[in-house]
Length: 360
Image (cartoon, rainbow, N blue to C red):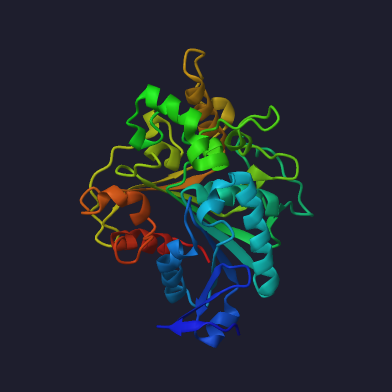
């Protein structure tokens, strides 16, 4: 059994590659835990961002899961670009799997841009099933669930929390830019000075040898990167989104919706999850039936429509969260993951919701 600091039934240690491992202090539980849960931080973050959630996962599912909080992409390393970070995360995951030969299953829980990094990483880690040829669609025109593996393990849950799946370019996707077209345009021109290559990827201004923006390319398999096949292979794909007060990631981009698809929500009535205000399960749709794109709309709007259409080919569980009554509501982007177990503890019910619906 691994050495680590144990407290209140949970052990943790810093792994050889710098990440944080969290597991049950009970030896019989830790030996039977065969489900790897990889937690990925957002921009300028670290492995400690998921510390609270990791401990809650192990307390609730001690004999099922082994948590690894990634730290291959921390602090300024999160500015190196989604692709570079994705490759580093993929390498890190393989190292964890090699250290834990009893692992059979794998899930990801990622915050903010970490969700895009995780999508890139699983694209590299995915391997198609040898005995079954993957088909583009089933008899009803919807994509079939893939039976491939991620790093040789069975993929189960892919959960993102406040992740800008549609990017951050224009169309009010970054709330603190106030939805003003002039400011949004200026931000897309200077973002690389602030967030470097990651900023280019988020605002989709990257031009890698004349290729489309990376976020756009990630809605299709690309050579050795099986972006969509990897996503499809998970039993569950879940997005948690702030409906307001998230000044970095807008509701539409984190919930993969068009403006017309944003639901009307009311304050939660479930005492167990007081900040969860709306839930829905969306089936995968045939891309040929998507909303037509007018030639009169702007480039960011056309690009957003293409991303919504591409990602909506897969089924998604969507969970909308609101902290508008919280004293710290302006920190909703951090509260939703309980980045700090003291200042952001109001988001604990969201973590409980993730665990309660987690497939093991």
